[in-house]
Image (tube, rainbow, N blue to C red; front, side, top):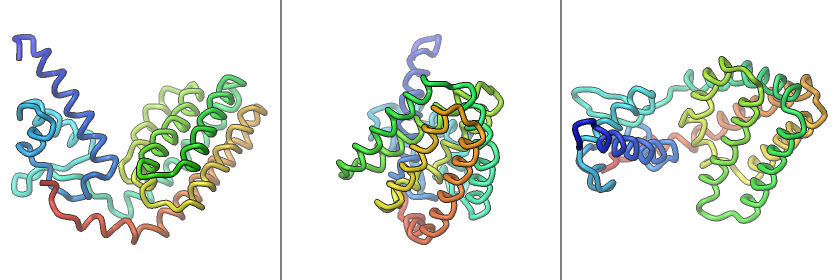
Length: 232
């Protein structure tokens, strides 16, 4: 590390992005311990930037820290999950309404392109499908959020859209679930192209309500992963 701390900062950023992806992507089960020494070896980094990255994970509520239990992947209660979907339903439907009125053809073209990518990914399938859908879905929702033109909505919703419990839903959804979600996305793109804010709002509300019910239905399938062993 130089005196300005540039190298360490860069290494810490690298470690954070890698660990965030692993946590969000489900590589570690909820509650799994994130051991500094082990992670440093995997990332081929010293323990200092890994320690800084773990602190950022804790700050971002992706992990928890306890003197007796160490740093562990955050666990999400039923109320956490319900609240997340409820807030998204209220706020993101408003963002969709604003985006449909302000985004225009340019936004509709972006959404249509992402929907085509999602369809191709579903058709292709494979082990990488959950990660690919996670990426495309996040880009779709962020495009709508950005087009809403509301910095406050963007600030609030970004953390909700990126919550690991939401992102991990892609790992337990069925083919029918994926196709249903794609259908909702297409309806949202159509509403944007028609500049129909009210329709976009209603479709987003439906989309998120269905996602909530779907996740609740599959929650038992997700929970066994939470009993996994420590990530060592």
